[in-house]
Length: 103
Image (cartoon, rainbow, N blue to C red; front, side, top):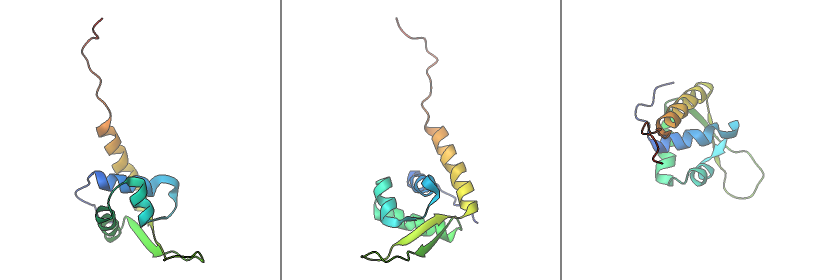
């Protein structure tokens, strides 16, 4: 598994969805949950797969409609995703003011 280098908000959003529930997710589902455009999500998924964080496979189902490409974090990818998401959460926590409250 290779490090990703630059990790922006869209990457964190996609990693959070992939971590949630520990089940495979399809691209359109990730787009809907994150609210990110397909032009951001699909290249991110490709990048995550290329770096060994994610594996993908075509859904095998009898349902009607086009097949879905399913994405799931690798074991190493899940560990790194947890670390990345924890770091992102720590950076977005509100800072408490040290100034006394006015009465």
